[in-house]
Image (cartoon, rainbow, N blue to C red):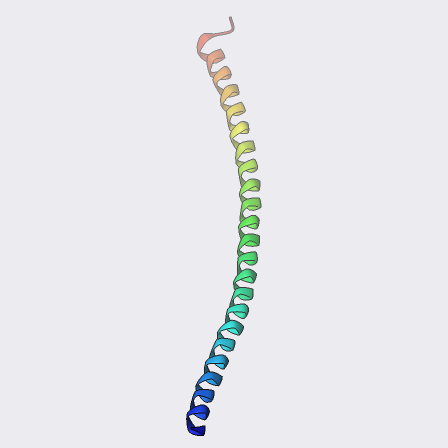
Amino acid sequence: MIEVFAEYGMIGLVGVLFAGQMVFLQKTLMAKLIEIEEMTVALINRWNKSDDKYERRHERAVAEMNRLTDDLAFLKGRINGGSR
């Protein structure tokens, strides 16, 4: 009879230890996942800021090219059409 209680007691103890290990691993892994998620969000925000800077620079370059093509078209019209 005592052997049965000892056997079931050991099985229960191993089960409790296994469940405790799973809870510990879950908490540890969730903390790591949250940390990785925060790092990923920070990296994406950094890329977005970089993209915004590139977009502003691109818009300035396009505006300058448009101004230059307008000036060039005006000069070309003056040369081809005379000074009316």
